Length: 575
Image (cartoon, rainbow, N blue to C red):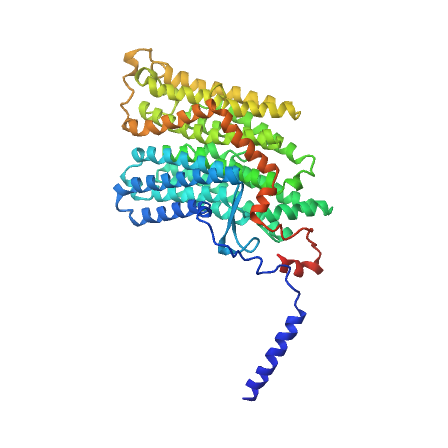
């Protein structure tokens, strides 16, 4: 009893003493809590995650119902596309929008923050995924459906959409992990030796990139005490203005450049892509080529140009390094494509060349170049997905992926061959197709910014890729038969006799036709398209509306962090 009474007297005393000694929090926690009701429109921001996760769960539950897999996946992706287009229209009208989990304002809550850059790529990705799932309905047989292709596809889209919509660096890492886990499963679907070999190369290099990403994220939190992108922008700007040492920030930026450069397949860490992308199923190759490298490029621009732009602007060499990486990525990929006789590996080098183009736009770091980069990213999503699909169907028709043993497709399938020829023109950047205007905008931005040597690399790389794809047209489509056979009807009797030739049907040609039509439309209606990308690029260079959407009452930190040991505790309380 005495002990109980003593404790009863002592505890209030100690509580009062501790309360008097404890530093007052830097925030009014009531002000940090969102009291207003969430509007129905705000749910558009996180609906992509809910749609794909719920659909993936349903598909997994009904994995034994193989006939249900495609319809459920198609319905989910159509709903995803409708949601993402509605989200894009909302952002286009009202500017950046933010929804924070748990009703806590950042940096307490985890934010989904959407601007035109993320919303535009998110909408394009969902439309490409619809084309992919329609193509898969014919290519993915009973066993592939039974062992998880469609749930993996939903999980892949969860990671892609989450990456484009998140406003937090650590959650960007999480969505990358979700994306990678699903891609590993899609890679080995079929368990063939070649697939396992490609998956090991793909997994090993991407795990290294993910580790570097995590290290960079940890260092960012150690320096700034936050991982919210809007909060980081204000703290990084204050850090630079205060004249603090820039070495830790340059180290963080370099780690992000290496990590995201590896994921985007930029030189010199791009050798994994042509060594692995040709091994999985055709639809998996197409979706990976159209989506995954663009997520890596998006993360590069989001982190280095947007979040740490104030830091990197103080460096005289950082963007010069990015420009050199871009030039080497483009030119070496062009030579790599020329050296290939395997059309699948040639397509991989074509993807890498496009990544170099977009890195060039990032390196120029002007509104015009960033607008061209976003336009090129959408173009690349559409054309690279279609290119892999067309080449996959060509391989199915001829029974070979080596150009020496291909030929005669035009004589048998002229309309299908025309689809490939249009893709060649689009990828090469010829008018009036989708690749022309972004390349023209990049060239113009380069000349205006005094980047003549980078413009020369862009033009030379385009020339190399045009020759490489022209060789595929001449050898696989235009000539009458494989190497060593005379042209003519007798030489093309081999077309369509391979075991995989049944893959070529209206069900697989239709999504390719839709993607080619999109490439034509993006070129013809370039005015409205570039009006959107110009607005998105303006948002990347003027971050005030984005920050205001996250912090309606203003950023919580207006002064640089004091990183001396004596103040770490108080600053940690504020963070």
